[in-house]
Image 1 (tube, helix red, strand yellow):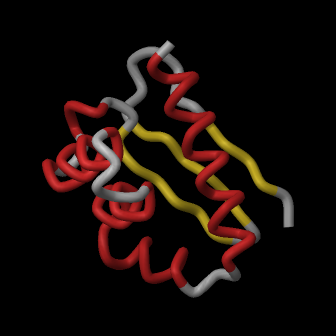
Image 2 (cartoon, rainbow, N blue to C red):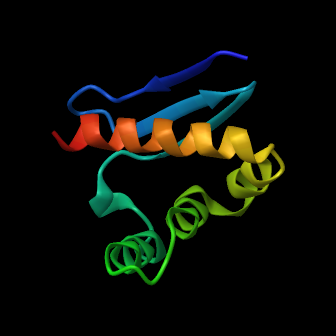
Length: 91
């Protein structure tokens, strides 16, 4: 049940998170994110949305469905891994 985040090296384009036997991935560069994820992120910043809106749009239907089936505590772990990976990539 180990969790792992693989933050891409410079020049790589995908972040991969392993969480309780499931792998999730998304584009590392926000310029490559689906527009809906960027719009949702702006709504989070203004207090009109939550991070689950960003994650759902970013992961797409198949990955979101797998994540949504996990217990809520695993979703909270995912959000921590997601945040850490994006901080490392954007620093």
